[in-house]
Length: 140
Image 1 (cartoon, rainbow, N blue to C red):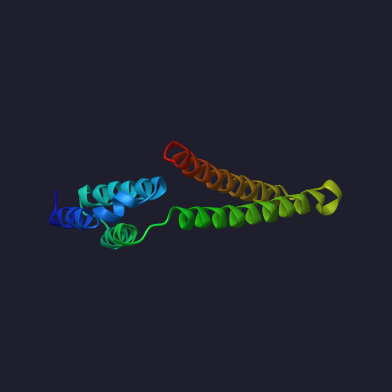
Image 2 (cartoon, one colour; image 1 turned 180 degrees about the horizontal axis):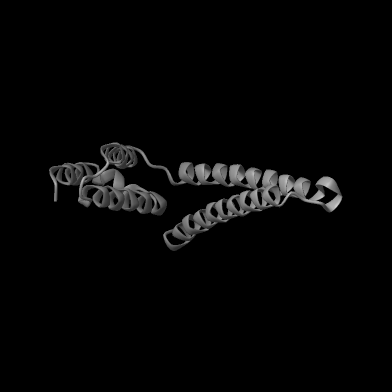
């Protein structure tokens, strides 16, 4: 265990009063952040930028975390990914209609790929929302 983990562990103990009052979503996010930081620190030759970002994220969560705020961010992400999916669907429909059915195969493949990526991102965002809502149900 490196000195960074020990310091963050101490910070967690100091902030334990807040942590104990944090909601289920915050507890989950803090646990994720700790696990991510430990994984980066245990890598041989860790990326210093990612380490710093992981430390900052954990510190931020320990200082201030609000379940409703996190759910709001997730909902905003869902709206953004839904918008990208809608745009990808429109672009795919336009490519299919081009040239009276004589489609450019490369353009069609690109539009299909963009649509599949947007759909996967939207599904992931919705799954994150459901996972967080389940945490709230389990810990009323």
